[in-house]
Amino acid sequence: MKYHLYSHNDLDGVGCGIVAKCAFGTGVEIRYLSVSGLNAQVERYLERAGNKGFKDAFLFITDLSVHEQNEKAIEELVRGGGRVRLIDHHKSALSLNRYEWASVKVEEEDGRLASATSLFYDYLVRNGLLAPTQALDEFVELVRLYDTWEWDRLGKLEAKRLNDLFYMISIDEFEEKMVERLGSGSGFTFDEFEEKILDMEDEKIERYVRRKRRETVQLFLNGEYAGVVHAENYHSELGNELGKEYPHLDYIAILNMGGRRMSLRTIHDDVDVSEVAGRYGGGGHAKAAGCSMTEDAYRQFVAGTFPLEPIRPDAFRNIYNLKESPSGCVYESREGELLYLFPLEKEWRVEINGAVREEAFGTFAQAERYVKRHHGAWLAKDDAFVKHLMEFRREAAAPSPVERVL
Image (cartoon, rainbow, N blue to C red; front, top):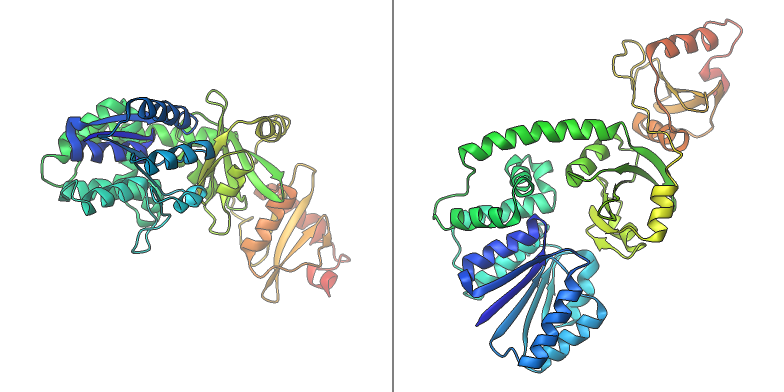
């Protein structure tokens, strides 16, 4: 039997290739492809299969999904005796489960989020094509933890470092290293040299994220607030860090103009970026998705944000103007507004240029989210806070915030 594997060219996709090498050795031909490159490759395979029969061939497609035309062609090939198995974990590919040759699962049987590598490994083991080992188990779990971003929640730094290593060397070198290491029989570890260069990479990523944080703009689009930034590298790390830095944003859009791609990331459970990507012909997971830079995407995310100024950071060296202070705190906006957030009867209220809004917020975080989303505001420095107190609080004739509300 001659095996063929077409897989994605990221860590999860290459992880599938590595376990395939462990299972089939030189008996598998592997091609790592971009999302846009898969269908043309499948079409060529199907054409050759139709001409030559490919009776002893088995095609695996992992971490990618085919378009409708190839769906029908694969179904015809399978009905004629051809062997194809598509294994994916993207929500946008669930419709392929109507075919017997496709298996798309967002979650593992135990409820954990799935990766293509974990699903493919399970398939190979269950069908007697690969014997499980401790090293393989650990490697596959690291890939799954990174691809689902569970490593961040669980503090499994090794998963992130595996992805860092993947991008530091060529795919061929990474594949060769991992196949050799997984065949050793012992647990999966990094060697001393890899640990050193990964430490250097961590510092490089930190500097990169810090610079891109200063370039992020805020965009209101389709009822959602997005952070938009141009970047060619470290999309997952950047999306995660910017999401934490600006939690009032629904998602982060990372634009790679050279690759004509847009990556989408969110840290919120109630936001599904695969739906955002779907508006532009893309797809992916609820918290990580992507699409090509279509004309609409360019117009809205590139041209539409070009005139915008980057998000202003909160003041971080304050002594008096502090978030959640019992005496309240002051924010500023580019329109010159002073926004005063203050507690009142177990709620938080917002005063804008001396006028108190009727809307009350249950927590400080909700009030801050409002002023950052609707006013693009940032925590002011101490001098603005003191000026505000002098203008609005030290005038005996001026009513207090409580009096203005009551």
